[in-house]
Amino acid sequence: MKPAACLALLLAIVALPVRAGLEFRSVGEMPAVLYDGPSLKANKVFVASRGSPVEVVSSLEGWVKVRESGGQLAWVEAKVLVAKRTVSVSVPQVTVHTAPSETAPPAFNAQQGVILELIEASGTWAHVKHRDGLTGYVRANQVWGL
Image 1 (cartoon, rainbow, N blue to C red):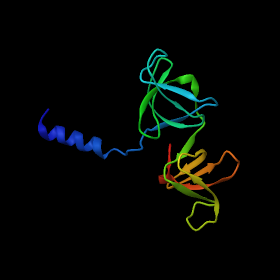
Image 2: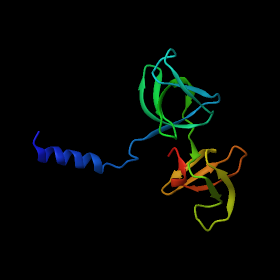
Image 3: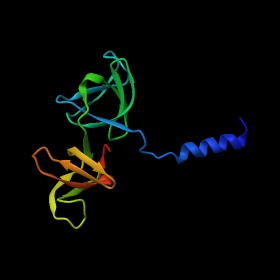
Image 4: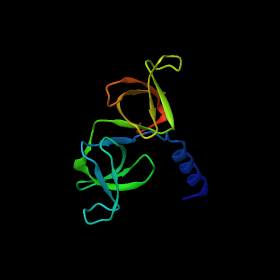
């Protein structure tokens, strides 16, 4: 391939939207063991809490390679993941508002690492629900899992 064609291809790849095609799932009702390979005989890397959001990277015969909120890649059994979407607070603290506006009254505050159920994501805001039942809107750039 000619250098100009290589450069054009590279520029086209770099110009692709970063969020295009990302698939997220959540850990089900029980914590999930994550492994360094797609096998129960592989080394255990860590345990993900129930409800934790994970990004699906690839799938292989009952196993899913995922990226967790800290960026680490690991394998998990597909059966422990659910389609229900969650997000985790990625900044030290967020104010969750009653409407998608910085001037809306606060609904509640959440600390870094708190897992929130995703009701809907639209643009720069995410409508979320706390496990205590409180709902509100948080800026999309303050959570991980969208």
